[in-house]
Image (cartoon, rainbow, N blue to C red; front, side, top):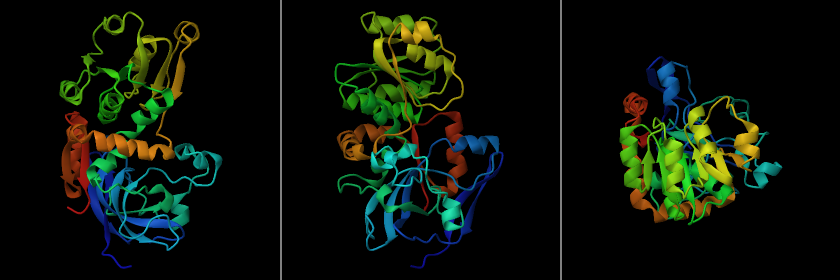
Amino acid sequence: MVFVSMKKVEITGKKKSQIVCVDDPEAKGDWALVRIIVAPMCTEYKSFIEGTPAGCLGHEAAGEVVDAANDSEVKVGDCVVVMPQYPCGKCELCLSGDYIYCESGYDFKEFFGTNDGCETYAQYILKPSWLLPKIPDEISYEHASMLCCGLGPTFGAMQQMGVHSDANVLITGLGPVGLGGIINGIDRGAKIIGVSRNKYRQKLAADLGAHVILDPDDNNIEERIKALTSGKGVDFAIDCSGNEKAQNLCINATRRRGQVAFIGESDKLTLEVSNQLIRKGLILNGIWHYNFYDIPKLFEVVANNSEAIDKLITHKFPMENIEKAWELQEKRQCGKILIYPWE
């Protein structure tokens, strides 16, 4: 197939970027070529602020298959979600659905001879066809794209921990991922206690249905959480901030025999192993994503929470205005932002 030269975004310096044209990606083997309709934004703005040069940006998208092999798991015209990473699809982890943890993934540049086609801040992307779940007819591209970082990490955490309708769930860090956690928790019938100092996101969290929102700078925050949970502490806690103080709050505010999930990226965490873990019998979970075979369940969450997802998606930009979108992310006056590569 023949396309015009593909447009993609590159970061060239501190708060500097450009849109460049590159050769069109070409599918091979069991890979498919997807025309990206919409791409949610994640943490790429940090590279823009710091000035870290990058030409392979973005890992979330939804779009339309425009080229695929005859024996592929998708066909031309299919509407699909673009799942993250480039796992091998053959190892034990991949076959079990935990592909995100694959240790034998493709080296994209080595496989294709270029990095062009590996990103979602672009008009096209190449993916193994099995990583392109088809979007149900009743779900829009925008809502389907929330299967990645918008809803995915906290959905994975709640699945692994077994969050249920009688549970109290603490979520620290109410950026887009934490806000998505409110939707996931409400969908399960759980009571959500959110923690954020950002006034914009406090209001958005309330609009999404969080039952209580606390400020992390409150010196009595642990006592307030205990008071909200009959003195025991929450059943489950999920940190989406990557902040050590918030991570410790999750551990300290969780009841004995409860569970904590860490989603926010961070480095070191200092713990009192005996008092915080052993004596409480806590279970700690590291969560990156969710099991591939749970995708139908997450599509159900999307379908059942259309109004909430519309609130989670607060801004939309054409790709040519990417710098304005990044500047908005830096100010943290937003929920999930979408970009449109063809506008």
